Image 1: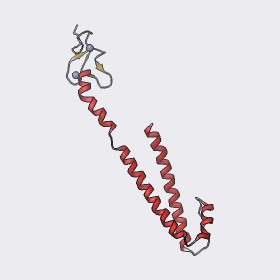
Image 2 (image 1 turned 45 degrees about the vertical axis):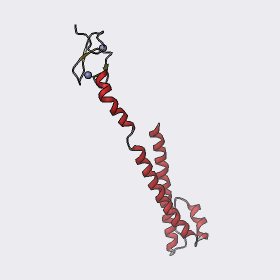
Image 3 (image 1 turned 120 degrees about the horizontal axis):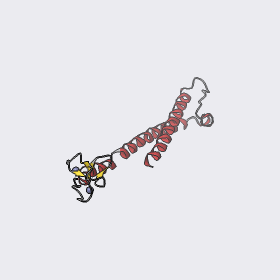
Image 4 (image 1 turned 60 degrees about the vertical axis):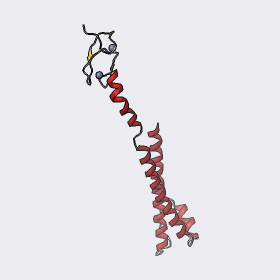
Length: 137
Ligand SMILES: [Zn+2]
Ligand SMILES: [Zn+2]
């Protein structure tokens, strides 16, 4: 009976997929089929690398882009609404279902478009926020 080449105590039942040494069930790493020494040498740096994937950075960049986009629209809206304060109340009450009133006024159409885009941006932002919370758990 061959003894484990790592601990030298228990009977060797497995063979390391990396170094080919005969190893016992206590000295083999399940899933990787490597002896403890090869596992430490090969897999440990890989596990560390997984933790520093650029996912959070990509998420932050994407969120930042959406916030910037929403901000530009809000600024555009604010400049348009400054001349149309009466219409402002109506648009806020209408909310996500814009009804065109004051027909023929291009500014109203632009404001409605801006409001719809802002709402879409907010929805995307909220979805991303939820998704981000789920990912971090
Ligand atoms: Zn062993
Ligand atoms: Zn090995």
